[in-house]
Amino acid sequence: MKLIVSALAVLVVAYLFEGHGVYIAGFWSALWVALALALLNLTFKPIFIILTIPFTLVTFGLFLLVINALIILMISGLVGGFAVTGF
Image (cartoon, rainbow, N blue to C red; front, top):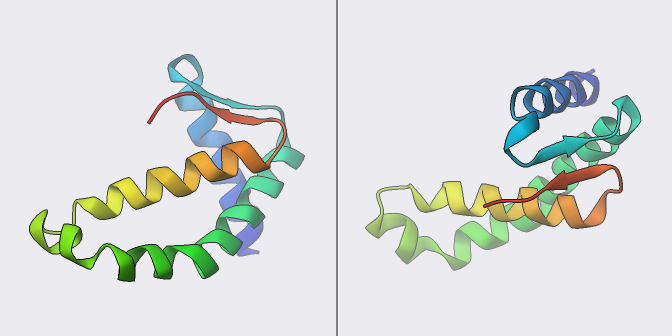
């Protein structure tokens, strides 16, 4: 159920930012994006957080936004039918 809700959220975000560099081909692409997002958040995000603790502390947690953006860009490269053209 969480995967379907995440896929719908991806579709809504792609619709809202359609002219601003976010493209999604359809629901199946959004489902793959949601699955990839869940897997990358489970595996890579904790590693990135641990490696960047000094930056996160200095920026009072704002560096976590950079980590999230990097994960989204990684998904853009992995999933066909999904593209993000900016940071």
